[in-house]
Image (cartoon, rainbow, N blue to C red; front, side):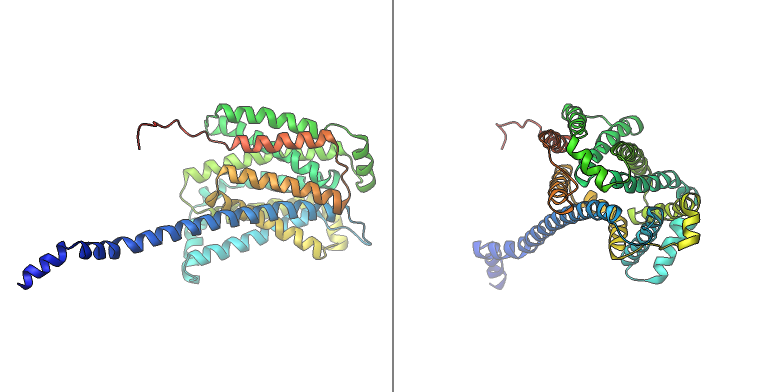
Length: 362
């Protein structure tokens, strides 16, 4: 009878329901929690990207136009310090992934960097280009207002796409090619000469808008090539992004120090490596060091459409703050039209049309 009762219990609807609830309940809960956590990380990383991008551009622009007594900080030394901070941050992340074990950290760094010299040397080329790009951004923001720089710098989407097609044999869709045409048109409108902008630029900058434009265009090409080259290396090897960033930072520090010696050696020997550094300078350096790490997090957790949204929001914020706070930007209807085109192109480039489904199928 006990066997019969056991069989009845197993076959009873209540018993089945109870067992099913016990079996299916926890996985569904874990899955929903995992999705919620992924969504939170996605929007958190994008929020950090908007903050980092906007604040870096604005603080860098402010620090290069602020009139103070004494020598101004050297942008070449700021690039080197940012690379060193990036290395330290990546080592801490590898240490965390190594379950906070110094022995494991030492073994990982030794095995992945020292024991693979050829893999490490591959990062020398993009690292040198990134170092050049970081120095060019200081030149660009010394001659362009934050809003114009932000919009023009989106041309890196065009250069990245072209290098992806040529180096990675990537195929672009109709929407992406259309977005690139709209992007170029928008940047052309943004760079349309305006008398009011030229007056403000001359008052706040020792350079010219042409110098700033050449600097940002060169930075766009260097960013596109280095980014695609780095992507190709990541796809060919299985090393973590943090290890690769340590390698980038190592070579970046070397190239950066060479730049300091060649261009600012006399000034450094006269007034010191950290001449002109203040709280604002350190904020700029830290924000620049965090840039690569934030982008790595966005690549991991977000998609192209949300990245486009973050870029667009950053452009809008930079324009508003540049006009109301820095007061180095005079908006024109031509600029706003060009900015709208650039923002639309950014969204369109990341748009992936959904495949046509079969309505007869459930």
